[in-house]
Length: 97
Image (tube, rainbow, N blue to C red; front, side, top):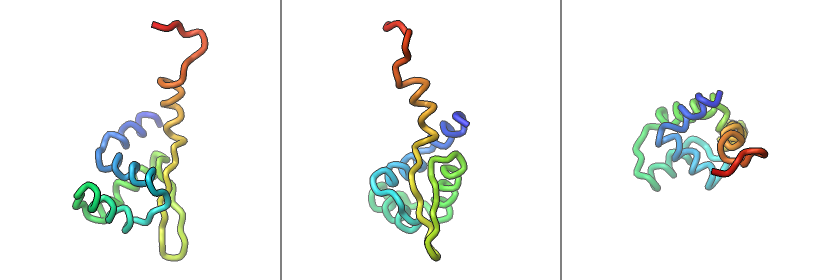
């Protein structure tokens, strides 16, 4: 699973999508596309952004919620926790270098 998260994060567009969800969680596809176009001049189609969101959802970094005909996208940082545990949190018994 960790490798899949790294693959998902390898794409700069997907990282920008996550940045936007960090800044404002719970956006629709339309809102995400508009923010990417305004902030980054990213002229990707809605279909392309939707495919990026699908990849992020597949690895668990994005979760969705439907309300009527709207689908809201939310950031989920849980898949990043094993990465933090492995490299960023100090381990007991590890000698400082």
